[in-house]
Length: 131
Image (cartoon, rainbow, N blue to C red; front, side, top):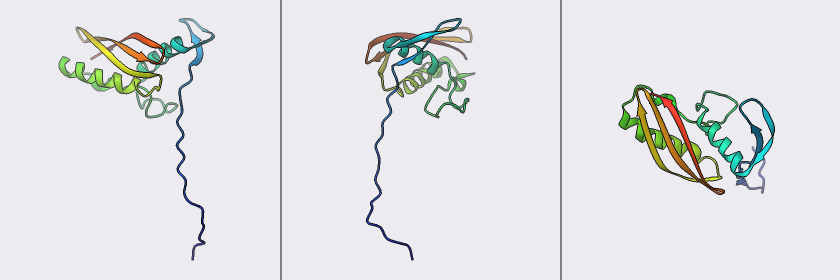
């Protein structure tokens, strides 16, 4: 016989917002901290430069799956890269939309330029990958 209790299971709704303050990274060293739009630019760079599922330090929601584009045709790459970038960046609560995609193909390389609509304003970014 199991004891009975009048306590009810409670569901806790905890949402976590990304910080808008981080270390200021330069090409050679970490120099102080940065916040708001500069911190978000850095977050966009890091998200798009981290292959999803490859690093146990990150959750499965962090990063992007560009490896799946290798060997695919340009039409597929254009559609899928747009979806992957939107999906990856919209995980960050500070980004509300990703728009204005432009693709440039050169050999087995593709450069995707886009605008991230954020709570701080528009951020123009790009990402190049080998396909």
